Structures are given as structure tokens and as C-alpha cells.
Length: 378
Image (cartoon, rainbow, N blue to C red; front, side, top):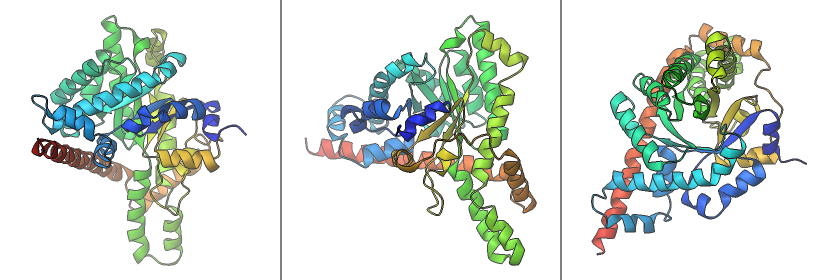
């Protein structure tokens, strides 16, 4: 039987790994995932790096070496570790980048979450990372905040690949696509090569269900009879419905005269990337956010445990364009019950930024402690 993860290629979906760790790179695990499962990219974020660095002893020797260098504070040490890991991953993925004609094979590195509301700071940090990592298959991750979107447009206009992260709603997805189009138009006007630019719009999935389900549970507590039963049927429906409608929006936005003009100059669409696809609720299938979102011209970035689960018992049937009427009905029913998806997703963006800042601070604290330990022994 063909590897279930590999079967996703037949549906036109690329699988990226939502994980990075030095051992993954040096022990050949990433090469094996590329060869056996057809993994085509890697995404990272502050929380992933925090777990990698603070949660293991694997970076101690590197920190010891960096501790002797001038100006080696916690942030400088973290940046060097991250840049080294990202370069390593990019080199491993470069054959995928080449074989896919630069559609896949990317590794993503996020600007500091402290800069989420600082356009100028984001631009400066993104340019530094792009220049320093110096790999054509790098994507710089920028959050879809009010300050982040102008940075996305400018970076794309300068020929820098961007992974726009922390999307939760169709409303913001449309704004992200507009920034993408404007960036490409700017690059095209300056004579840049549109065929060299890649971007994804990372729509977070499981967190939507977690937030909506909490609100439903609150209402169920005080509801009775049919009302309680109706509320119960809406649990676990919002995230997939939201993603399915975002995909329909993607198809609509990447059609028509404006897009066709850019495509004629070599541009390729900004694919939707499904993020936060590990199932948070143990009552739901552990492969729910893979099976439900399989469709052409999409990316799913998957944590290792979810990838293992799908390889073991997943179904690779394309489902992304099925049940669209039901998706509309489910979201309308939530609104009728007083649950505004716009309000939920706005709150999720704020929470997502807060979580990454907290992870970043924990990461810096761990590096600071490791540096102090090294220096105290000298």
C-alpha cells in the first residue's frame, strides 16, 4: 500500500513539517521524511524553537561556543542558533525546491514576535534574516497584523519570500492576498522576476474550534432540550467550515484580469497553508485537520505526532470542496446563537501573538540561564 502521506501529493497538497530541531537535521530524520513521506517544507516559530532549545541538552555545546564571543547576549545567541538550523534545513530541502521548480522546498523563519505592531522594525528584522540566512528557499514569517501587512507588501516588492502567519479569518485572508498582489505589482514595475517569488497565507485551524467550542460549552450549560442538542451539534465544526470557505475565496481571488496579468509575468498564487493542525480536543479524530482539508494547491504544515497518526490511519481523499453548503449553514447557525466568528478570530490573533511573545521570552530566559551557567564555570 502506498504511503498515506505520499497520497496527499495526488490530491495536489504539499505536506510541510511544523517542527525543527538540530537532531532532526544532523541525524538524517528530515531527509528520511522527504524521501519516505514526500515532506516538502519546514515551518518554525518561537514556540517550536523554545521547546527545541529549552527542552533539550542538544544546544549546550553551541551555547558554550557562542558564550565566548563578544556581544553574545541571549537574543544574539538565539538568532545564531536559529539561523544555523534554518540554513541547515534549507540546504536539505534545496533538492525539493529545485525539483518542484521553486513551488516547494521552503523553510520558514519568523521575525521576533515583539515586532508584531512595528512595521519598520519588522522590515528591518526581515531584511536582516533574509540577508544573513542567504538561502533562496527561505520564507520570512510575518504576522497578519495591521502593522504586518504593509511589511508583507514591501518585502514581496523587494523580492523576499514571505509566509504570512497567524491568519484566522476569511476577512484577514482577503487583506493578505491584497498585500500579496500589491507586492507583486510593485516588484513587476521595478523589473523584478515574479517567478522567483513564493508566499503562503497560514490559516490557523484547530485554535478556532477550541475557542468556539468553549463558547458553545458555556451556552450548553444554561440551555435545555432541543436548544442544548443544537448547540452540541455545532461543536468541532467551525474550524473546518472556516477553512473551506477561505479556500473558495482563494480560488475567486486568484482569478480574473488582475491576477492573470501577474501570472502572465510568471507569478504563482499565494497558497493557503493550514497551520495549527494538531487536534487539541481528544474527543476529535487525531487526523481531523488533515483529512478534512485535503485539496489542490494547498499546504498543510503538520506537527510530527499528527504526521505519524496520518501515516498510520489517515484517509487521503480530497474533502476540501465537499460539504460547502453545510459549512455555510454551520457558520450561520453559530451567528444565530450569538457567536461571532469575526470576534472569535480577532481575539485569536491577539492570543496567538501573546503566546509567541511568552514563548520568545521563555526561550531568551533559558538561553540567558545557559550562558550564565557556562560563564560561572570559567
